[in-house]
Length: 279
Image (tube, rainbow, N blue to C red; front, side, top):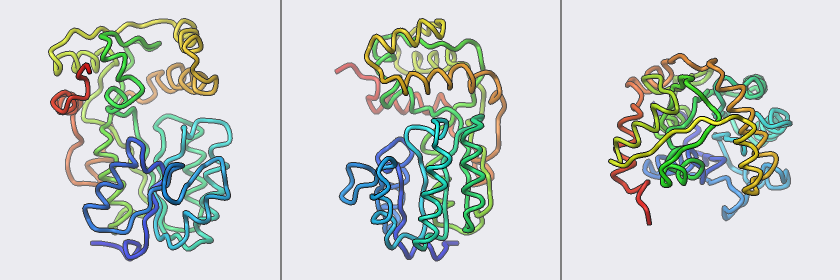
């Protein structure tokens, strides 16, 4: 059943990102009015420029809230709260927040969204499969060696397409308001396991190498990676990937009535579409 919000524009923040562009594609296929929220959009949206918020919210009934770069960065919950207040004042009646599993800062943002006074749905997601094929880890995969400061810690990798489908359901259908969906894949894998799946899917040797956090961050700094990005990655690999997320959840099943997509299926499909082809 479709809710009345779909008669108004749906704002998708991070609308060119991994999950956001998938949400936009699915909404477009349904013929629903969509506004892409990004700095490059016709009507720009920038988390760091609050003067862009009100124009992007004009005529919007529901919003997918994906914060850049991550809800774990300092000040993120307060920024999300300020956006939610303005959204509600602008007439938005449904907020769907992409959150991070195992991140205390993200959970602070969740509570602020939950107290905004409108319908809300929380998508608390684990590590994306697509981190291996879209930007971040794609180049290391292409180079045949993925070097990370993480050991044999199981992670329930989740597919960005599953996240997008849950988001679209929450934005357009009844029955998802007030729900917190923990989104994971169907099994636990270490990063070495995940790289092994990609190696099998591509038919090429791809090694996983564990290094110390110091060596990893030093290499990033040497490559000119901004200090705030290095700090975020350090937090994710040393704090969030400490085993706290080493359990599966039923969010995809609850929201969509089907099991989540397996990492092996993702790797096979990504390989078939040329995601890891050398140019």
